Image (cartoon, rainbow, N blue to C red; front, side, top):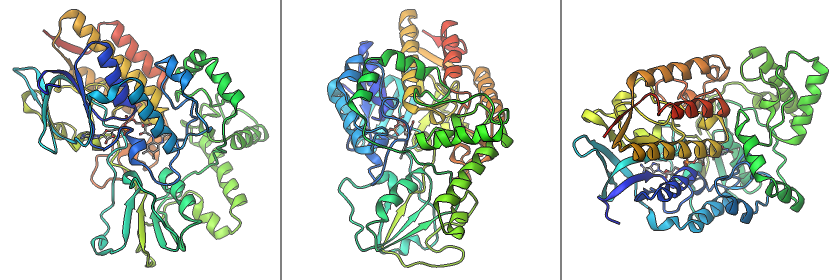
Length: 496
Ligand SMILES: Cc1cc2nc3c(=O)[nH]c(=O)nc-3n(C[C@H](O)[C@H](O)[C@H](O)COP(=O)(O)OP(=O)(O)OC[C@H]3O[C@@H](n4cnc5c(N)ncnc54)[C@H](O)[C@@H]3O)c2cc1C
């Protein structure tokens, strides 16, 4: 590869980057993918902690772009574990011969746009420099792990781990005193694996989450056959659901419109089927009273399962302090496992010194929160395209479905530019502002912003409190993007 003779640079080798690279090559574009990790797989390479598992079903959480791939790959469990997803992504990299255009252990540190040459130049932490017309950021929404700055942490002499930077080799917790900090998705998963091995496990919980059983199990041959025989319809239906999943049930538009006994029966049914409770009624994410009915149901389940009433109360969603030295007690531990999450959505992008037209700095432009057009472009940063970025629906959906959409849409845009002889595409500032207002309005009509979550940046001190994802669901988002494409990529300024 000539690092200065590229059409496109893709950053990140997870679901997004691998598929993007494949599409760029199909377009006949010369592309190189730069990945910080020493393997492909993104999330599923970094999060190798025991118990790591996807919470969408395997047939949903997989690529749909190639039928031969769908037919030859056989998922073994209802919810795929991290090792199986990592094997799958490695298979994809081999299957489509992608490795030849991937450089591993290459963390991009700077990306600067040269207006005269109309090219992006990137530099990696080992000093490699490359330049290309297009810069596609497949850097992931949850790839910048966060370790809270606890006073005294430096003096801790034991082993410490972060779930999102887990070592490749197995970690033995036998006979050790372990603290797991955080009870989000990763914390809950890792706790159940460490508990049986450790001499003592301390779980440091600030806020109890709504944890529901997944009822994972091996898939039967009949189940696998049924999906394989019908993949096109399966994918079509998934794309038409709010979350982008085939396998979620819905009992109706409103939890409040049905008698309590009927509602509870539906919740029971969903509880025993596994996950997906939030999709049972259409108003659960928009109406507090509706949502309360589900919250009460889950709290009642916790009270039923956890026989000690005090523990049950603590595990029922409320706010609590966090840390090996909590506000009330100190604990001696050998190991600390940080399951403390990520600087989500903006973190991976702002970790890079990105400078666009006129030398404008992305970190400055986003000092009050991220601003994008559709989550797919940034005004002032021509030919820079984030995938499943802030302003898109990604993290509120089956991310793989959104990624496929985004990659296809970006590919369509690049094709359009090629057909018209355009060298650059840049989102207009007015359209970007309007999109930001739309994202905020849609979020404001839901209950999402009421929780102090990472969607809002609430887990990072000093991060602007802006609800970052588009909460309007995948079908609506697809429709908007399609409409914009059909109108000559309305909102973009093109230059030859
Ligand atoms: C523990 C965990 C569980 C999850 N479970 C689900 C789930 O059940 N369902 C769901 O839909 N989603 C889930 N997600 C979200 C998941 O991140 C996405 O589904 C999907 O894997 C994202 O793919 P991606 O390619 O966009 O990003 P990633 O998989 O995060 O890949 C991004 C890659 O970019 C690389 N990178 C970042 N910055 C740089 C840089 N500066 N230079 C070079 N390389 C860089 C990273 O090293 C990483 O490999 C989960 C995430 C985590 C962390």
